[in-house]
Length: 508
Image 1 (tube, rainbow, N blue to C red):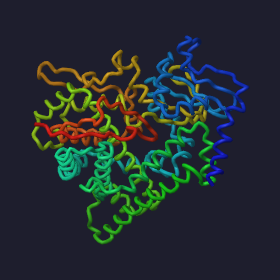
Image 2: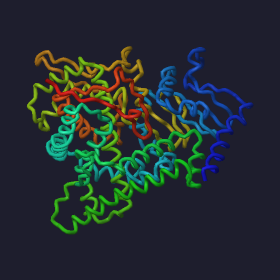
Image 3: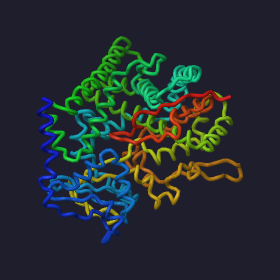
Image 4: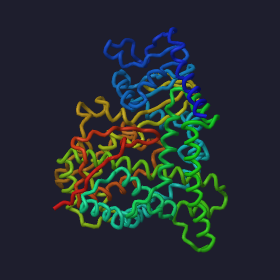
């Protein structure tokens, strides 16, 4: 089997070199008649049949940075990436285009067939992988989780308990023993417990003191990673062939998905048992409401459970991981946050968490530089023209790129590479306090925008601010490696490569 996989991979790898003699380099910028010699070096060369597959393959490990470099050189903040077999993908960092895609012509840019084919094995027909009436139904039924009553309960009950009963004792022990923690792993466990408790009424206890081996979490990470590899594969025929032959990554993905769906099925089975044994049980969580409705099949419910875990576990933990690293490098920002925390009572309620303006700005700034979802792809349902003049043909993939947008000087100024929470704030002279000044969601599409804007945006900010206050008021988070330079990687969501090893120091 391994020999067969090697043969298939080798033949597909050899393909670009077989057509290398037919090189015909094409320029890829849209709206640019000429490029300087320095900027043209940034353009991915395109060849007959294989397009820019060689450049995609070479830059696989630094895909986000590579795309950012190209977009920075584009006069319109847009370029067309030529893929294998004549397919083209538009990639943009232009806010006017983003607004057009996500709002003005929303129904012309659904998720589309490419995304569904890549992710259906993992996400099924869950909310992140569906369009039309199915998407509308899931969004409507999920929206109950994000009303003010639910958010208040989430902050003052679920997050508070996970923070005070598990995270704080764990950090206190680590500080006393001077042990090393992978903060990325700890935050993923924290976020996973939270989303399971609020959405499913189930406590997996992944942040219990023993830090149990999380087989489900490992399988989930594997499924996210390989599904993301499918999305970014230079030649999609490769993963499809491997899936048909059940070899390599695709074999691992099948095993991981089996574990993930088994875990989700266990949660559903336990909830059904609870509802059956106690018919008067309050249907206060999403899963109870889904099962009590009686008209949804178990496979569909499983898809929704997996999508919620992806949203609640991976995104907030990624945002917090990068935030704590940035704070460790910027002591003046940490001091401002501490000043804000000290003005609040020790136990923060819902309203007090909402009012943490400087912390909110710091988190927004962190996600500008390191968005949990660095890019998002749609598929054109018909011919169109983007506001910057880019011609779109039906069936083309159209990708907007929050990671690149956060680094565009045209959008954020000459200091766009700096971590600067003050860019989100203005001083209220009459009160002597900061007020938050948000950017429009098409310049800052970290939470998407338009009809598909993230339902969990407020929940994510409340959870993150509660964690920041609870942790920084008591401890300093110190990277184990001096001048630690983490590597940003992403598949469906972003991560810090190799984790974030830290020491915890108690504040005096």
